[in-house]
Length: 235
Image 1 (tube, rainbow, N blue to C red):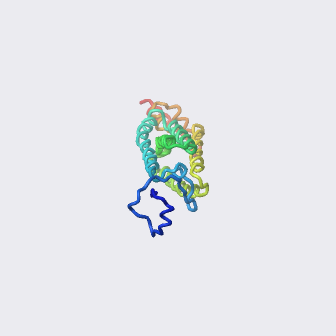
Image 2: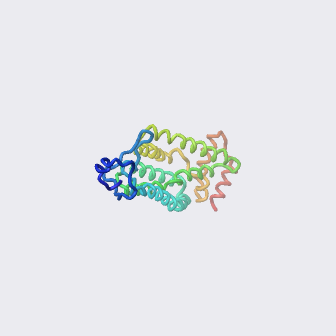
Image 3: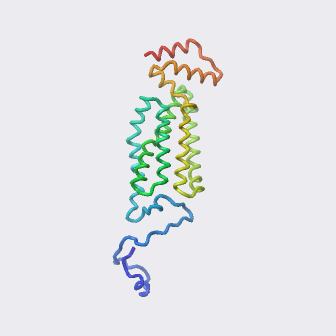
């Protein structure tokens, strides 16, 4: 804002500001127009003017977290299995995302967004890998790629309208991240990757999962197939 005596400016009948006037930071706060938009972390914490770099740095650190953690979590899914990493990343990202809705400082918000970023991509790409490992190459487009495309696109289309309906950034953050708690049920409803189990020599678990899958598809496993799985699992 201009650092001038506005009483004198008004009394001087000037047609506009003088570019040579000195400026200073806004000392009277800011007023935001929410007629088309809703309150965000930027408007809540006044990340404008001299502090307009904060949203950009926060978002950049989100992707730094993703860049740093993705290789590590990819290795972890090979070491400890697909299912534990799917659950862990969803719970961690969901908890950090919900917590970010209650922050009132740049450091706290950015730190939590960094944690969410660490789980970004991995929390669903490992699910995609698990799907790929259950189908042969000729069916992967239909059984893996198409579902991802449909539900990811549908989710991205719904999110802006959900945000507009909720009309508050913190409520929106709670709603979209709290849904990740559903992943806690995955150990009981989602099977571990049979290919990963077989690569670790856990043949009995592999056979049990494949047998259940065959039963659901009204198929049966021949003794030859079971023996082949046992042989592969012994290597």
